[in-house]
Image (cartoon, rainbow, N blue to C red; front, side, top):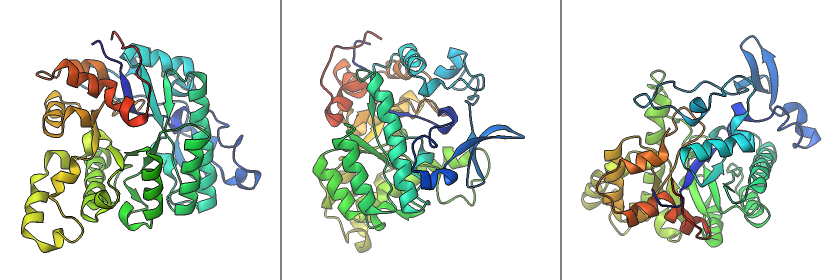
Length: 370
């Protein structure tokens, strides 16, 4: 595959962060409340204000997932506790090389959104996470690119941190959750924030973190497998029907995991718009016309689904993603693209990296031989 390969959906993760990540960086007044690694009967865990967040030191992925294919972390054979592979630059680059990835766009773990925290705490946490990502990028700017997080519970602070990540850290994208503590993005007082994103020309990467509709999803990993695409569908639906994609026509928005459910089921929206006045209050065109403005990543795991996304929404609106380093990551991202039949080399080059170059303002460079 003779393309430059850029993955736009890659993360840092709590399980792989150094133990002193927060304690070294947060202001002294927050240090006692900051997350820290403590020994528990279950082993070392991140603990914040007495609440256990997540295990520390790496976790075992879904062995044998995807028909016997394994994640890069499993293939690397270094999942023993304490090996911080994704935040050890040389090891992360080795995983990228193994998977044929030329450039990763590194964004925060969704648990770093911390929208429920007091605004000042969230601001300082975002500052720390963004600086940590910037530090990773600075070591290998030819292979890594950063994407930040902002404290959406305070729109003014969110704008200030957005400006800092763009103007000081050089980020060209911002990762947002699909809701703010259960409140839709379009109803959280974020109009000035979206206007500033549009003005700066940075990419919004929408990444769900479970769903606020959890009552019937307590098992079978449904908060992820159903909850993630469902929450994305709700978020995109509100962006369309609340008129945000018309009000901010120059927004660049990419939705993780193939965009959730809507890119495969847009006809019901268009039918409702045509037959119900309450579906035409804020928009002048059929909902699918606004969907055409959006971008979707390739983390859908089935070649037929990816081909469908390319055929319906256009190769110029699909971006390679991996979801590294999670258990729901695509374990063979370049091979996955190669298994899609009937897509031209020109179109696949856009999916593999050309769209990321354009949307993130990356200079065109020599292509990978992966």
